[in-house]
Length: 206
Image (cartoon, rainbow, N blue to C red; front, side):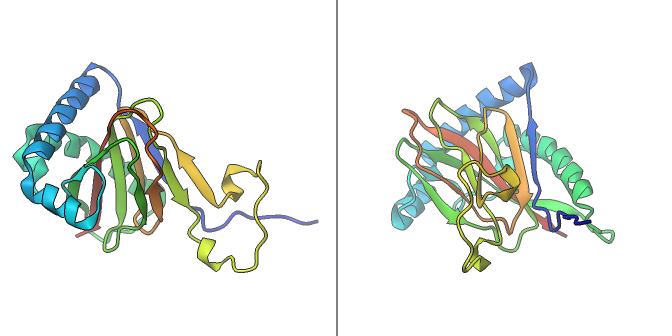
């Protein structure tokens, strides 16, 4: 009798932050993100130099949770979800902790993309979604084995989600997505008519 085991599973954590408090936080995050993007000249120069569409504070501001209280509030909320995800992954932290060591704003304009990448030197990475207009991009995740599938045939158009080489996760305002930092991901073309605003972050083992 034959059997099939599922091994080396890639897990992605999703949570929805809802309710009046979450809605108020989102409104404050959107206002703060747009204000920071307008004032952050160093970030604007970095985006222009590197051909980054829209705005990111990735290379210019490293203290948002301390600079703006609403980001600090978001940090406390995300910490809880990262702890839950780490428990699910059965990490043996050996008395150390997973600590957020970077958090940044992303404002993607209509027509903007964020090409495929990973987050080196981190353990868990993720994104919190602030503003997702109709038609905004989903997060595209790539099977980490894809580069080794040298002679494999393509998958069927209606293949099960777990058998596909790419997966798409469509967020809404208030969505938290977490994944292990080695998982390659990208943001396809933003087909919305307005900006897509999100907050990304990394956690390190310290």
